[in-house]
Image (cartoon, rainbow, N blue to C red; front, side, top):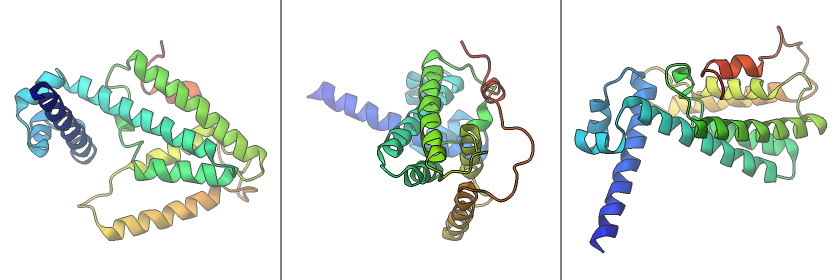
Length: 208
């Protein structure tokens, strides 16, 4: 019983650390000291360093969790019979979870094999979701998977100042406008060429 109690307490501490780290890094910047994370989580520095030896390890863990949540959102979206409803639900879920909030860390940490594997799985599912919506005539034909991913990144950025209900209302309003802009047929030609997978992945480093 004592062992299980210690394991449960360690799991709770880890969850608090991860939640605090995500909040600190995305609001204070990725140069924020880990001491700020420990303070917000209400744990000692020793507890933090026993779980994550370096800031990079902590960021890698946060990125992996974000990718896994994206995969979960995609699987749920693909289970939705209506292609547009599924795509819209995916975008809204990712924006709500701020899945793209860690994108600015790209190129500053080593990408683990597990991160690459999860990213590949997310890309495969996202391609299916976008293709399904396009083939159904619901998504404008010139929108790509990466367009959708980068849109989610933009909406994942924290707003200046403290969180407020007004900010959330404005965010939902702009998201509704943006989602309507994704719908077929689309009236304004999109400028430039679509973003490439090589450019997108190159932000994080060379794939294995």
